[in-house]
Length: 451
Image (cartoon, rainbow, N blue to C red; front, top):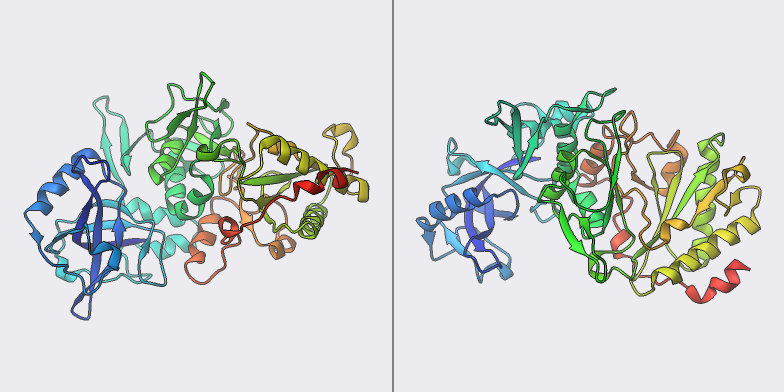
């Protein structure tokens, strides 16, 4: 979603350098300036310097907004609200705030007194038609500026990330390009970042798209943009990768990353996973309805153990049953627990489940892959694309949606942004509670489960 906003104040960056940390913005309604949120991303150094210069000469002592949250009354520098900015965001909150706003640029062609809250269907260029056509990220193209490098090649600057060859096709069957992938992640950033941010990553890099050469990357290299962050594991010589921002997601698209595989722990507590995953990998001859039934059986056992679980497609042939946890157990302890759950399933329902990874024994069954929970292992992350024709996505779904899916590749880059867009319009987010669930793995039952 896009919105013109009037700038009514700013805060300074916490790094002590004196640069702007965030803009306080709003729109006019009934003769008042209504506060709409803080915009803290989408800037580069040159832009921040220009903004600081423009805002310094507009300083005032009092807030221009009709009302602002109490926590903003201290530390904010108020300005005359006569500068207009263009902002991209994911949705309006119930409080009338913009969620995940990103600064796109100043609108010197607009007068601040004309800035009002835009309603669906009012944006020139018809974002609504694009959404209906299944490519909601297309509306964001209205705010993409193309330039040419000294070499003559076309480049795009998106949220401070330099996209080279933006029209390089990553998914030939769809004509889905590098720029499309970057805008896909911008359009769903509010849904994907809470699950992805701060986790070490293994990345599937396909610089020439699907069908081209594939590289599996977990360490930085010549290809790594600066917005993809690095960290060193104590006692190890190599650095690992993670992202924690929308520009970081855009940078992954620039690097040709078609799959994002996060660890089950985060950098801050690397040795204490905060989730486990049961990867249900079926015999290829099994119909999806059998895989869905198997996933529900896993859920039932986990419920009996006092654990709430969530499900997502893999973008492949199986399903992931995911369990959020308090980060208090180590890797080996959780590996043993998940192994015990897999063994219990295989012992009680041998006609459905197998806990042995050998494909020779998998005919007509579903392999419960618990090895996704070994330290350093990973599984494709929520909302990540897959490096497969059709651009399928590993998409969180409701349990009762499994019966309506014809297969785990039903949800693609065309459908997923529409689903996420619906979360702000009354549709339930199937993983809306995932990060709120506070539960502990009953590791004391591991021995009994394994039999």
